[in-house]
Image: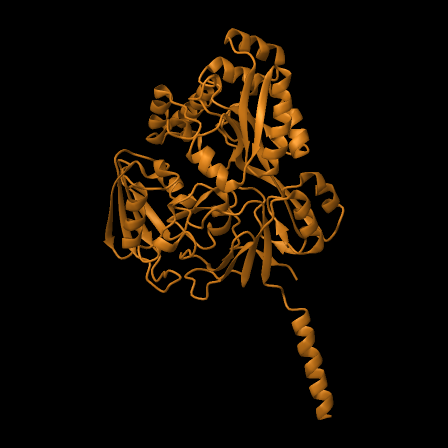
Length: 489
């Protein structure tokens, strides 16, 4: 009898092990981040790994795009709108065991707005006049002018709270306050994170997660089919989605992103410094052909740098509609002929596939292109940092980022003082009706200046194991937030 009981116990134990709920996840990503410090790099892939997982800010974006409390459990605003008082959660620790206090918030914000700051979104902090630690869990931020958007600004990945003790190594060994800790980075292959046992908030269901870097669409498809990857939130082979839809092992997740996909033009590089040439390029582009050919029908045409799902969006696609005859006439008016432009393409499939299609469309109106396929680090250094390009294709996945056009030193080098004044007014305006007017004017201004070729809003086309729950459908920011992800039994 004793032996029977032992055998039964062993069977029960083995059955429990076999059917235990899975708590690990392998997530596919197209691009490998150049580093893991969201406060010191522009690449969206950084936030895709660390946002809400390793690092947290005072506030954060929810899956619906709403701004929610994070390290700050609440805040108040002064009557004149210039002073924000944030109340921090008590007992929060960084992953290295040090306390997260108001002094760390002071350090973070002062560092981000410093003259020598390398923060990619330094403009988010430009309106801060001073930051003061009232006590260990209270921070007072005084602004130079009212800014009703300040909690929104603090939700960006560029505004996560870091500590002076660990910031020097954040690029390769990030230390945050989030529900997951950094475990390892095997460059060229993956990053692994592990559940934080001392997390101040609600513990995540996943014990660990691995971000696997697979840029080739065919390899991504094979990895999903073989089960080497459990989910691919931004799947690079949309032409294969129908195969996943017909397979009960998988779930296809299609949503929207903040990614305005543009044919960026170097506005200081002749002849692209001539608005007639930029307009000619815009009219040479057949957006629907591009969406069908590069994205297999997934994507929404845009005519300016603004997301169609935003309530303030204005449809300006008609200003740059496909009109090759008009394109040729504009080039003739500009006195430009035998034009050859350098087209630099980063790795994402929308850029590589889209670049070939746009090159063919430009050739139809008499513009030749020299295509250079670049790795992400090379693109960041030469195009984004060095401004050494004529044309490039990239999705800008930051939320509500039309203000980048007010930065003359930004990589496409658009310098319009009137637009800069408009954005300055927008930054200090809290009235919703006036903000809508300013947003409309901003969209119309850059569309009329043909700063870039506005192509389409990037769709979020994801594939996941059908048992995985909690992945974001839409992408209000560039993140793979795993805090609510779990395997269904």
